[in-house]
Image (cartoon, rainbow, N blue to C red; front, side):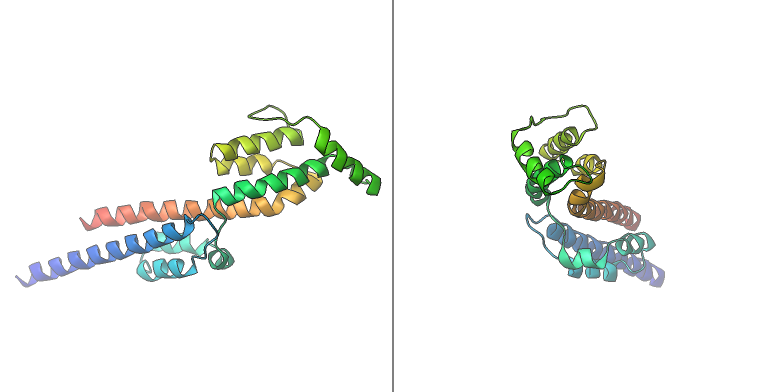
Length: 193
């Protein structure tokens, strides 16, 4: 009878821990899924507290940079809106030669307004084709491929896009961490049964 009570207590304790992990994970998902940048450092700390014995979850949480958790991540819609500005700046920069002066910059502004713009999933490695594919992927809510495409830029266009690329990578890394934690939480729940 004593052994049965101990086994039952261990089973209940396992259920409580699994439930706490799921609740903390849900709170993190809710914070990350907000339509605007929302800090989620408290949710990360809750997950750390409830999963201190789980090596996988602890390792995954350690990959999330503290500054990202404190500041939050941009939503896909925020990144899409920001890309519209980045796209115009990248387009202008692509028309300026490396050693271009003031006249080259003025000419690039004019040329960027009148040049033909590609749309959709087009072939090519030129800046305009890359920008078109990024926009295509963003329209399809495919942030991963949009980021990969934009990361192909070189020179000044890439420098101008680096902040956007970094924000997109932060978003993708946090989402991937959540997916891994969710899989681990599922395994933990199954092992309790």
